Image (cartoon, rainbow, N blue to C red):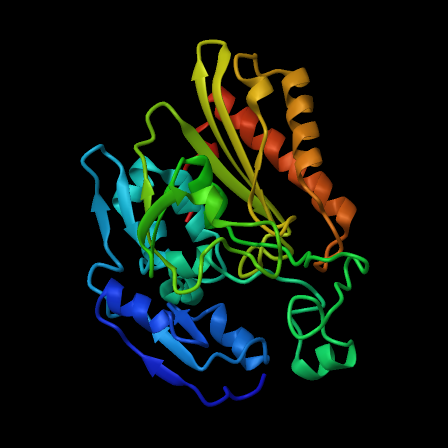
Length: 332
């Protein structure tokens, strides 16, 4: 890694001040920096200004909502998210997902907003500058060709966040501030399946908070496959939420990560009202396979990542159907 290029750091004290700072040409938001700063030291971007969001009042707060939900400030650390009693008690799948990210020191610094908005990854992108220069760079940065799908006009770098899929199946919404004011959208709409574009945020906009509704009758779980049992990004991950009405599935939500350029919602409407049995499990695996677009962008083979994704989905859905506490209880 190289030393950082010359840049300036500003530290606004309010959301509106941050919006103004981020509206300047070449400005980038800085939260925990666990994703951004290593990339900058690899020459992946040269922003003129980093806008440190940590001084904004309430940015790291967890607040109870009047409806029984939670409002999570974008500056809440993943360590806090994984250990907070309210999160663990009401939304254990979210706490579990946060506790699976990287290692303890990363989680102590990394923030919810930064983790959700993390950069996409690819074996042709996450390299040193001299390596990428020798390969003609790539479509994601400085180049004009995607080395994964050579004739493609879009980037296929993949999204490897753990927290986003858990929040999406829980029905979370994103609060966004920008030059045009403030808006709230379903969290799933924050992402776009394009490895270079990544997010639907407009110029000057940034994620200020995430609102999680009360769980109600929904039970949720998240799991991932990775090379090591710590630190590593998911090679394939899945979050599942299920509501059961007697011997029927009253609701089913599935979101996958680590295989596509965004965390993607798997269509499951055909299974609502059905019984969870071998046929339903097979149909769900088929839907997961159809939604995922696994390509050679990581160290693991395409076949492995596709098969483990299907297996994890079937395992979690089965555990939630049977009411297994293991499926939704944090392990860390």
